Amino acid sequence: MPAKWLKDAVFYEIYPQSFKDTNKDGIGDFQGIIEKLDYIKALGCNALWINPCFDSPFHDAGYDVRDYKKAAGRYGTNEDLYRLFDEAHKKGIRVLLDLVPGHTSEEHPWFRQSQSADQPNEFSNRYIWTDNWFCGSNLNYIAGEAERPNAYIVNFFKCQPALNFGFLKPQEPWQLPMDHPDCVATREAMKDVMRFWLSHGCDGFRVDMAASLVKYDDEVKSGTCAIWREVRGMLDSEFPEAAIVAEWARPDLSLPAGFDMDFILNDPHTHYASLLRDYNAPVDNTYFKKDAPARDINRFMDVYRRWYEQTKGVGYICLPTCNHDTPRPRFGLDETELKLAYAFIFTMPGVPFLYYGDEIGMRYQDGLPTKEGGYQRTGTRTPMQWDGGKNLGFSEAEAEALYLPVDPAADAPTVAAQEADPASLLNTVKALLKLRHENADLQADGPFEALCSEPEKPFVYRRGGLVLAVNPAGEAATVRLPAQGMKPIFTLGNASVDGGTLTLGAQSFVVLK
Ligand code: GLC
Ligand code: CA
Image (cartoon, rainbow, N blue to C red):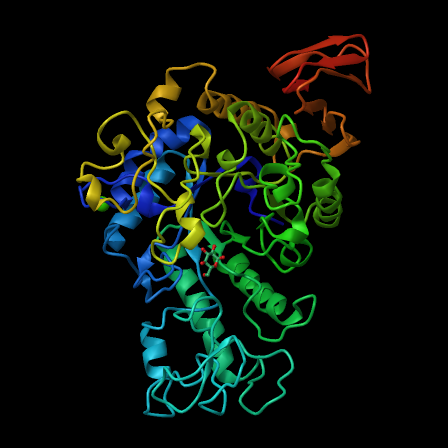
């Protein structure tokens, strides 16, 4: 059973570098997040996911952790982070940190010892070392870096050596089984990190590359799932309120393994991109685009419905507006299209995630030079745009000192401008989240059934006692309703009901009761 507080949770993802700088050094900080908690609350979000904010050389924006138990100095101290937990809790906001269990920075003391010439030592097997200093053409192996005469496996960048959770079926003497004491020690070390932050008041973790733990795992990730079930056992007995969300995009595997939630990511197998950002397809058929030439929500819905049926009651599927790895939805969608996309995301079952700045339609800043291993992801990580002041209210530092430049466009969207406009994207997001909080049927556990998902027609779905319909097209459409006499309780664009027929204007959305 997922943590109870998730039933009505709406998450706000914060990339801490870029949210709010309070000490004029050009980079966001914990105090900045604390100062914006009221804003987040007023938006309708009651939970946060903060990207890694731990000591790190930042070769991958903090996903290369050097000390799991120490806050990165540039954001503040551990005490500041504990204060953030406290202040958030006072306002009814939960906080997830980002756990990176699969790899560390090559500067982590465990790795410094593991790679040293002084072998064996306590950390010799904390990482995965071959029996040779030469690794041939094997791409995931790094040779020529260590003092010891072996090569090691990395999970992502070269600076991120993979921790050793063992091999499902060891084939070579250097491949240890999962129950080898040194692999068990890795597992215990990760539980120790979780206990540390949970006992200081955090509410759980977003888990980075959650599928990556056991090497040469099978198709259904039996080895890695066994480890997560063990972690779940620990949480259930020691921190029963804690929640974990997997970066995995296989809810059929991750939720039965003990995760409360899993993200639908941009990966090709989910087809989620076809809703919000289909620009790599031969023809741009992004579902929510007004002029999509062959609109078909089933590219996504077929996958979603299968997973939904398989995991109902076990855990939640999360639809994010975006994340720090993906171009922002504003890259391909205009403001009206975004409103409809968010209306869909925020009225689906499971737990929605809003990426900071998507609520005002911040742009993807194409062509920025890479920052901290961001590469193309850098354009999604620019500073939050609060108001028309210096650096759009992000920081009092000089522009050259900023972590990343703010949107240079004259019409860069800001919170202040959109707060003043009742029809803005920001106020639409607020209204949608309010609607969700007021109607249990729209929340995580509310029932879901697709009533019409035919290509080129409005998508019509039922959530308990409510019927919802979205028409992203530029022309009006009619829909036969399952019952007579339903009344609109929420509308974007135009919608009217006559007996059992709903007429939906161009680019519209409606919730009927
Ligand atoms: C995940 C993170 C990404 C990071 C990678 C390696 O995909 O979301 O930002 O670079 O893992 O940790
Ligand atoms: Ca700062």
